[in-house]
Image 1 (cartoon, rainbow, N blue to C red):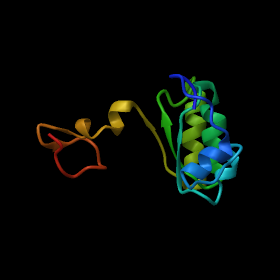
Image 2: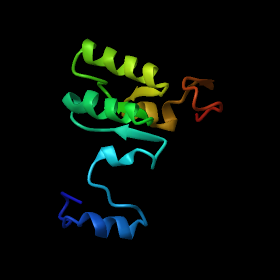
Image 3: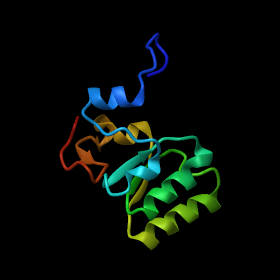
Length: 115
């Protein structure tokens, strides 16, 4: 961990604490997960999300999806080519408070009103 006065915990120690597997990079996720959240600098979205899609992993990419329209188009094409789901999100899109408006669902992930 960084910031807030916390010491940086070694990868293996953190993995052990949370009963998780310590990995050295996102490419090691292939075969271990069905989906991943891509939260890296925008200029790396295409390379990271593209590699995950190619590995058969669905991705949720933070906003903006890419630094330009050409890169965004390549990500969309990659998802289609590999039969994967590629979505982009903002903080509010993942917050239940925003899943409905006056009782009407705004997000297909929620069928009930969250008020």
